[in-house]
Length: 381
Image 1 (cartoon, helix red, strand yellow):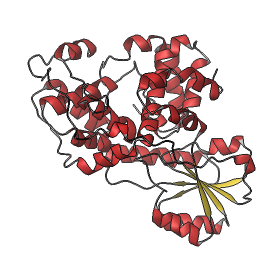
Image 2 (tube, one colour):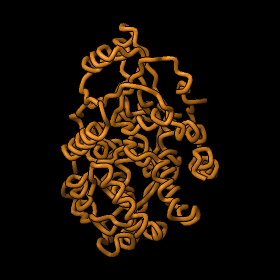
Image 3 (spheres, one colour):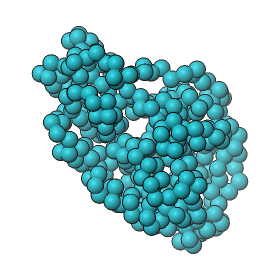
Image 4 (spheres, helix red, strand yellow):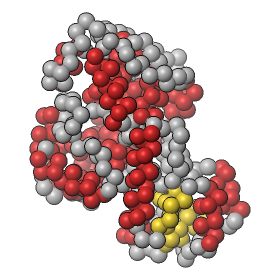
């Protein structure tokens, strides 16, 4: 379901655009089962920016009108919105990380749909977005389990896990994101949108108050995102290095557009907190990227990264900007080693995020009103 070679991914997306995207708005909320042909299944690649948002929307717009793609484009911007919102509300993530206690998996609850989705997640690393909402609701309000533990479970097994969309999605279901308004799964809704595959009538808690919190973290908002704007054409470094990570597997495209000469490597650290499916998928993606890029080494620890930079006689490294929960290179040990060796570094925030994140301070609907302007800023209209 999730190939790792870019040409195959693009082939599958082109097929989706040609055959299914026309009915996306009508069918996107249906969970028809494992093939999930009614959705693009691009989330693992957008999460790691093997394909950029610009690239995806540009391809879709080459074959369809903007109006017909309204819902599809909104869904891409939802992920951007979540990332921007969490970046502006960093305490939300630290509170979540301090709260979860266990990732004990509820394998046999007797709720057929819930148990099916548990197995689907464990076996494929994926769940339809609507199923994630139902699953979280049942976890919190029927099984009476902490939402933080459910979010942690998803973080280990989802192949497209994103700290922002996952954490904030669980908070939304619980009634913490839109304060006082929770999401409750109902048997009728599940029956309808699984096309009669499941009907957990009488098994679900369909009436429950939202989860309460002693403090409203939504109101603790940063004025702006603390990032350094990089103007590539004005970089005075003649020995520039790019360090690609699984947070952004196509950042080289940005430097190439600016005709910069640079050395490049891909830093890959295998996370033992993830499921074997997720780890294998990420490693395969990274190996394919290094194979497809000329002169790109795979580097797996900080000492080897420093050695690579020194051997190449580099005096500045460009890293992908690391949003909340995605930290890899934003590490005191590494950054201290670079400074001690007179190697400067820059964390680059893509224009897509730079334009969008400032509008993510409040709810999605004010943000949605900016989508047309954001498409223009990204030269997509």
